[in-house]
Image (cartoon, rainbow, N blue to C red):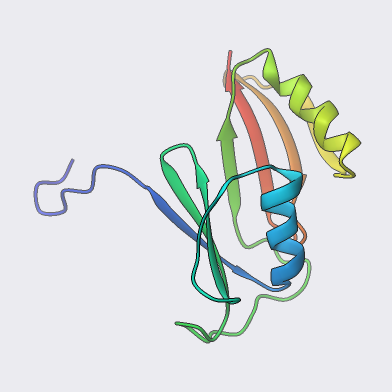
Length: 129
């Protein structure tokens, strides 16, 4: 750790949603993350372990242009136990999520599962193996 920048953890992640209703349904219902807080219709937070995952719309704080449709903006990785990766894949498939890849054992020691949220962000469920 750099003593001039004593950063110890990443505990708050913000996604600038293109389609707030679809993103809220996906993270809240499809992924089942518990709603932590709502600050109006343009800002809400889900609890994901020790992290807060916030969804907001452009223009609330920053008004940068949205990346073009289909352009990769971010990837989020969620860790589970090795035996749970296949269960997650089956559950997501039953909930209408298209699996991009996996479950796959990777040469770097992870079992991975990749899919996208409604805005096209890449999501990964992984386990260390």
